[in-house]
Image (tube, rainbow, N blue to C red):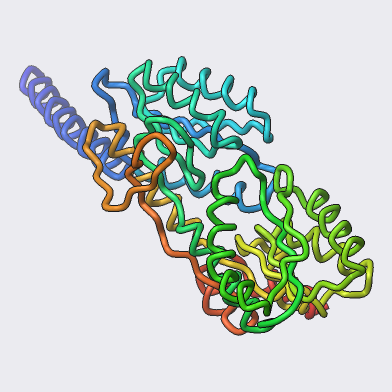
Length: 356
């Protein structure tokens, strides 16, 4: 009886040892397959704050989602706020992010000048700031990540002058508060200047569009048509949203598809208009490339790594280290091998209007 008891006890101990050595192995395998979490010096997860001007336009929704995905793929966390074009709200939201203990702030400024206050407040708390897509003026900005926005304007002007080398041009700009709108205009007029000096092109209308909104762009275009007695041969609009407003105004006068119109951003509505022939071209800025680059730089800087950039952009106060990506001119001929092949838009969505 005693021998049987001893054997049973021995077998029980062996079974327990086998079970105990097997369980940790399974747990370890599970942990190793999970995404690693980056920790700061206080052993808390690295947190990136993302202060956005607006989410009212299609492209900014894409920026938000892709940036969040890219940051989280690197094992960090991101908190996103949007100010809907309100300067005071953006400053207030940024302050809240700073006080919440973020490790780095990324900002898409609504107002290039007013956002300098955000950079100053962040630096007082020892937090570095990256300007995303739009430059912050007159501030000790740590990094600027964007596309070459002057080149965007050059691409627009080159595409339109190839079609209309002589005639009356209207320029429907972006928001005067956005530095990108100024860079784009510089690029446009860099190309147009020789034509203007020769007398081949006349700028019959040139106006900024408050907050980049289609309704304000339409009002501008309606004024342009009225003051010129509809004598406009080509339009360069600051982005696809403003191009949409321009085309609405042209359509009301029976001119949609007859007057070439340029835009930028490759919004779905913009590329659909290219397919049906009411918009001539757009400029595609691969946002997935931008968000990935910005996320990698933000997380690296938040970890304390020194980031260097070969390019510099003067913001009125300093030469800001800058990473400027290359945009792509898009028209009906290369839609399939650009925005569609990249997965930015599906073929079904792009060609929906003509497939009905």
